Image 1 (cartoon, one colour):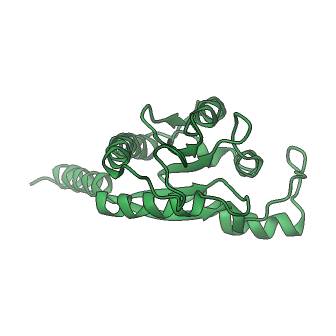
Image 2 (spheres, helix red, strand yellow):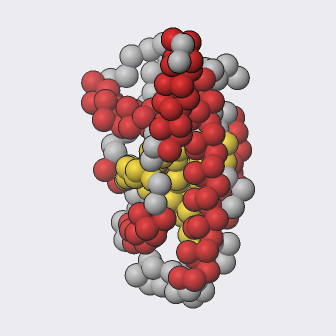
Length: 214
C-alpha cells in the first residue's frame, strides 16, 4: 500500500468514526414560569431520547440561566454578570451538533426567556438542526413552534419538519406533565429524533469538510 493510499484510508476511517459518534444535543427548556409543566415534559422526553440511542444529551434549563435583558451593542463587552452566565452556556451551545427546544405557548407565542437566550447568541446556531417539543392548550404549543421556525431560519438553522406537540391538560397532557397517550407521543418523538439524527450527522460532516459561509 502506498503512502497516499494509507492516508486516504485513514481519512476515510476517521470520517466514518466521526459520522458514527453520538450526536451532541443541547435540550433547551424554555419556560421559567413558577409551577411550569416544562420540567416534567422535559423529563419524559429525556427518558425517551435516552432509549432512542445515538444521542449525547445536555440540558440547558433557562430557569437556571439568569441572562440579563440588556445586551451590549455590536462589538461591545457584556457586563461581568452576563459574561459569567455566558461562560457556562455559550460553550455548551457551540459544542452541540443539534438542539431540541422544549417550549410552552404563551399568548400565541414562546417565552421571553427563550428569545433572550437565542438573541444572546448567533454563530452557535448556524448550520445546525433544531427539533421542537411543545406543550399547551388546544394548540399544543404549535403556534409557538411556528414562530420559532421563523427565528431559527434567520439564524441559518435547519428546523425539523416533524415536532412533538402535547395538548393538555384536558387532552394529551396529564396534570403531572406526562403524556396520557404515550404511544402517540413517543411515535412523534421517534420521528422528530430520526430527522434530527439524520440532519445532525449530515451537517456535522458538512461543517467539518467545509466551513459554512451562508
